[in-house]
Picture (cartoon, rainbow, N blue to C red):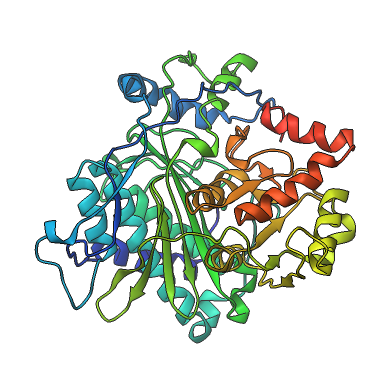
Length: 478
């Protein structure tokens, strides 16, 4: 993907900050919920979806072929373990820092020491933390460096959207931070459509392979991310954010790829490669970073949700929300109501009822909508209510990306006690068919989402039900 020289310079400086950035660490303090078992995949049977012809590029498959040997050796680690959580007793902790409290780095170290996450996942989260600090700085200083950071890049991404300069720069920052860990088999970003070359050191042998889709030669984790969600608002200073999710790389030993890939792949080989894409219920970690009046990082390892706030005086994320639980019902709905005439009838009726106060609560709901997914969901998570980006007549399969927007946010919401659906079905059950697949998303307080689901269940629209069923069966095509 072409880059302007100005963007390259800023990204290179930012990437250097990521690599050299240090971190302070302190012992976990009172009231911190920590799980007691390391977790792998869901025990659900693997899904073999149908891929659209040509969905997997030859370049991707060529790099994927090199991963099969190492992936086969990891096949025995796929048994899921039951997730439980225990409360850390501060009396069992040594050297708790009273001045700073629990930092994100110390929290991850504590999880690693207790065998809850492994060192590879700890390293990945460390890189995400450092990249988020750099992006926070870029977002905050963008108005002072308008020529370098604000405005359009002059390119269009794989989604057909005009790229902002900060889209390109933050994508490079996040990508570079993650690939230097050496712990990832895959990187998938909203801003990438084809595999990209790895960073070259003083000679070509020092190259670090980076992928934007399914495979790489080393590493056992897959990281999916949207580096700057809501970037269309960044010129106006409106809150934006980063969304990320981490999967454990699946076993690809059964994919028999030809040594000579110049002639392309058969339909069966393409289906096998596409089958390595996993539904959201297989996530091992997910989170988002909100860049606003403060920079907040919200994270889950599948054992509840914790929140951290960036303390710029020490350069660390400090735990400020030890256990985030969304209220069972709220009184706020968040959606682009200007599109209500284009929505499916169940969604139109539901929003009309809660707005008028004729829903189950008997009270009218208030509309709050920023237009930045991270900001709107962060408010929903803390105050309760419902966030919706539903399907419409133009986008019948929704507009949010399943892998790096819908799935991570739904995982976080469910871990906080909420729910996430597409209408009839659960977002986390949908098997992706391609990296940039889109999906309708309705998530928030459990009671609110269940009330919305009832409108869909009562609907007698066969086309609507068929679309939901096709998503669950993996029949969506690019």
